[in-house]
Image (cartoon, rainbow, N blue to C red):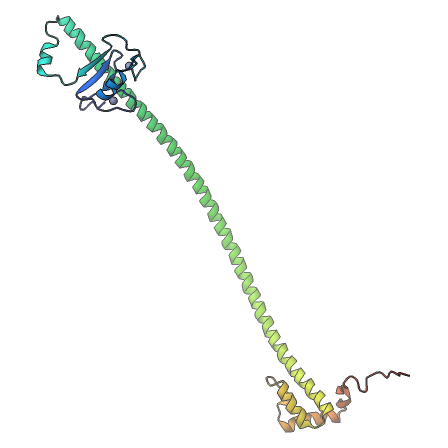
Length: 255
Ligand SMILES: [Zn+2]
Ligand SMILES: [Zn+2]
């Protein structure tokens, strides 16, 4: 009920429509709109839809015009003694007071229910916020530890990378050395089987075009000097490698 515009509301559950025109009033102090009153009170037995009271009496239900005409108002209580007029007015006011009280109770109940729901929602929201906060803190900690791990990996990667580069440099050095030694070895071998020094030097250049030992890069005269020097020192016998199947082959007497 809106106290501002002095209008009663239909007491039918879930209707609560503003009453106008005609309304159905009951002896149990309930009021219904024309639609719900005519619908509910046309069947038998007659039960109040609001409080389930039996309304079997002749005057238990009345269809009332809410805005009566001036003629009706002039005549309806005319001729009655003042105490009866006051009694009727008092009962009508009691009916109104009861409706206002009911509406107030309903509004207070709705308010209380809304307040309870609000508090529950606030509680849930607070709990959710707390759990989010905890999750956030945990995630921040995780991010921080992951950052530390990443920094550690970065440092290790840098170290390993540095070591790899160092190994690579060493490998390059060894490779150069190996190339030099191989070309030197091939040169010496060829010299043993082909005594002409010009030929074996040409072979050595073909095999190892990239790196040449210092002692071979001294020019033709220098190379000849180096190898003649080896021969003079008796190095020929030291580097002499016989192919398999010749002198080193063990003699097998087949009969
Ligand atoms: Zn209604
Ligand atoms: Zn009732």
